[in-house]
Length: 75
Image 1 (cartoon, rainbow, N blue to C red):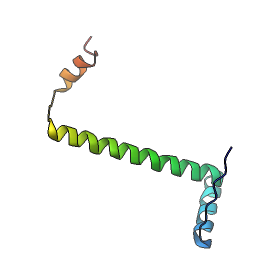
Image 2 (cartoon, one colour):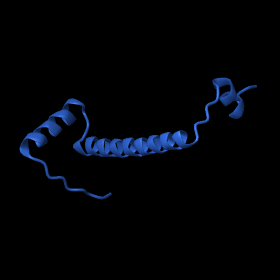
Image 3 (cartoon, helix red, strand yellow):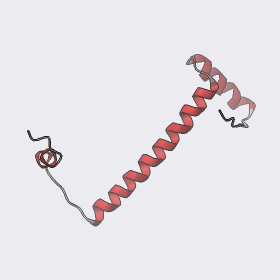
């Protein structure tokens, strides 16, 4: 297991500790969860932006029924 040091001011420290306590989680779990969620959100946003660029370059729309058939759910 690795350790990461985090420097925060007294006000933020108090807020983090109170939040963790109120939600019955450790500070490590809180920070880990927040960091991983931030990373996932950034990845999702980049994928969305790339998909929108691709769609603008080659806008192909299909109906819901066509999509279900294409994915093999038409049975």
